[in-house]
Image 1 (cartoon, one colour):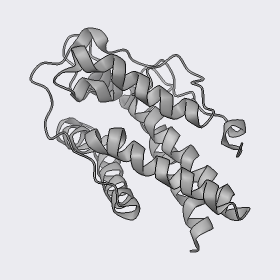
Image 2 (cartoon, rainbow, N blue to C red; image 1 turned 135 degrees about the vertical axis):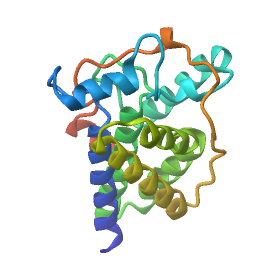
Image 3 (tube, rainbow, N blue to C red; image 1 turned 90 degrees about the vertical axis):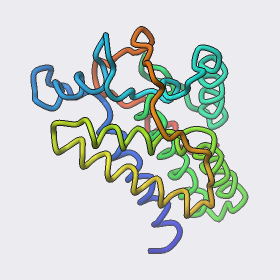
Image 4 (cartoon, helix red, strand yellow; image 1 turned 45 degrees about the vertical axis):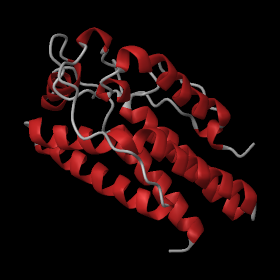
Length: 205
């Protein structure tokens, strides 16, 4: 697999993983009920699906963290197409999918400088955001899930992001444990799995 094919494959894999973390359409399916139990319980969230919820100082850090994530998105011409916080796991994975896709297109068109910009953004986003909390998120998910599908998804996500950090030489300062007390009032559950990023947004500008 050459570097162009690898970048396209990485983009596909990020998008595939992102789809697994949107709430399933069928409200009464076993998977949607398990999704709600894990990620959306109003009084005690078992496995928060938002990055900020893993920060012990989230009352102070939430605004700056969300602004920084949104800044990454805007820097590459992306706007959310769903009413959702930018630190949702699926959105962060979708963003990485777009960056890898833009990298592949740049390589395909021999735009090496643009490809390097995309790679650098991937490394920075892993170090500042996704790579910091994916470990504790997936460990919690695998421990608490009562459905094999989410246990498997957690394993695959952790393995993939670890390989991405090695590939990009990213060295995030990882969060190793959940905060002692989750703030359930900050947690909302997306209604559907509508994707936040369209094909049009993947064009190189």
